[in-house]
Image (cartoon, rainbow, N blue to C red; front, side, top):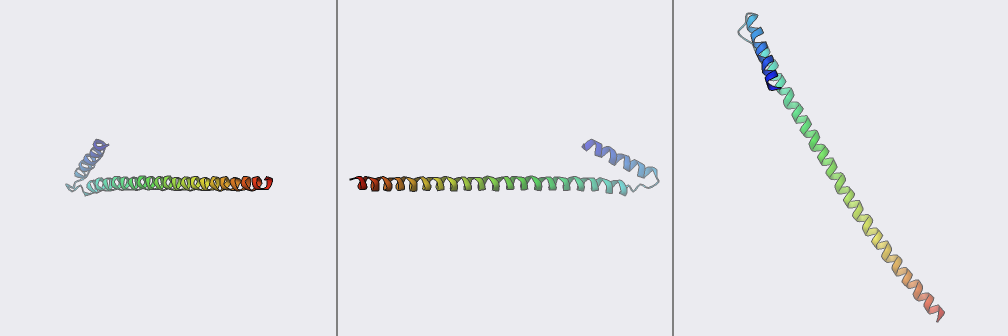
Length: 97
């Protein structure tokens, strides 16, 4: 990729010199522009990658939180059911006596 860019850069310089001007500003400008585009793509891709990573992390944390809440809720419901059964049995036992 780099050598390809350098070839285009060299070809642009030669073309500019052939056209009579030793100043190859158009080729240099095109070369800089390519670098700017490449840097911008890298920046955009990095930001997208970081965003995906952050979204995944938040989703993972949310799932953990929900699972913990569900687990605690089930535990509480089981405890209440157990206590209720105990009361019912005790009441039934007292009634039969």
